[in-house]
Image (cartoon, rainbow, N blue to C red; front, side, top):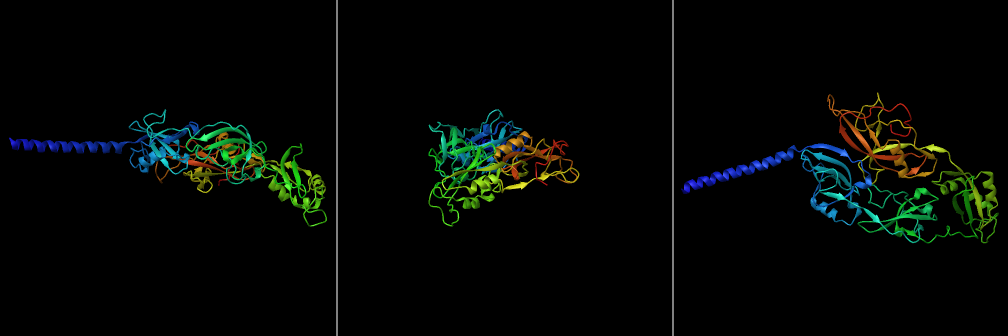
Length: 461
C-alpha cells in the first residue's frame, strides 16, 4: 500500500511538473506571437496630447508584448516621472499602436526629449489609460493689476517663449535677446502657471515689434518704465526714424557727440553737433537700429543729411526710412530625431528628381505650391509664421516616392515626414524647417512634383 501511494505521488508530481512546463511554454508562445496590427500618427491637436506617466507601466522601444521590445525606462523610472515636480518629465503622445491581443500602446516623448518609446495605454484608443493619463501642463492664473510692462533686465535671460518652457513639446524661444526691445511697452493679455513648478508666466504683446509676442516669466518683467537709453541733453541727440507716412518705426540716440569744429564731447544743451551726428549716423548704424523691422535707412538722402547737419544737443531729429520690397525666403528642410538643438542635430533632406534620383528613405518629393514664403525683406518672422505657411501650403507632411530596401525585392516602402518645428528669422534670409520620419509599407501617396505652381521655396538639392 505504501509502495502504491509512493508511485501515485511520483506520478502526480510528474503530471504537475509537466503541466507547469506547458503553462510557461504557452505564455512564451503567446508573447512571441503578439504582433502590431496598426501603428498610426495621432491627428488631434498637439496640446490635447500632453500626458504624464501613471507609474504603473514601463516604457519600451516597441509595444511591450511584441518580440524585440527593449526597455527604455523602467517602471521605477516612470513612477519617479509620475511624481516629478518638473515639467520636463511630462510627455507628448504622437502615435498609437494596436496589437493582436487587443491592447493599445502609445508612443510618446518626454518634453525634454530624453525619453521616447511605447507605453501600455489600455484597450481603447478613445482615452489615455494604463501607463499614461492626460496632463494639464499649465493652469490659468490671475491677471496682474497693471498690464503694461517692460523687460526687467533686457538681454538673453527671461526672453519670450512660444509656451512656458517644457509645457508644450519643443516650446522654443521667440527671440533670443531682448536688448533691442528694452524700451518697448509690453501688454499682458494672458496669465498661466506651470502646474508642476508653480512658476508664473505672462503672455505679452509688443505693438512696436510683434515678433516679440510670447510667454515671459513674470519675474522677468517690471511695471517700471525704463529711462530712454540714459539720454543726456548736453551730449546727445534723440532720433525718430519715420516712414514716408510719418509713422515712427524706431527710436534711437546719437550719444556723446562732439561740438562742430572740435574733438571733445559737448558739455552744454543746444550745442551744434551736426558734423559728429552725420559721421555717427552712417548706413551701418541705421541697419543695426532697424534690424528686424523691414525698413532701410540711407544717410545720403538729402532730407536726412539736412536733419543731421542741423542737429544740436538735446534735440529730437527725424530721419526718413524706406520700406523694403517683398522678398522670397528660401527654406531648407531637415530630418531630425527631436534633439533639443534642432539646428545641429539634423540631416538635410534630399530633393527627389524624377528620372535622375534613386528613390530612398531620404529623397523627398517637394510638391509645387501656389506661393513661396515671402514678406518684407529683413522684417522678422516667428517660428509660428513659418509653421503656418507650411501647414497652409500642405507642406507639413512630406513623402518620399516608393522604394525597395534590397535589390530584387518586391516589398515596397515609403517614408512620411511630419513637421515638428521651425526657426524664426527675417524675410529674404534662408531659414530651416524640421521633420520626423516614419517608414511605412506600400506605395507612396506621391511619386513626382505636381507640374503647376512653384517648387522654388526650398533649397534642398
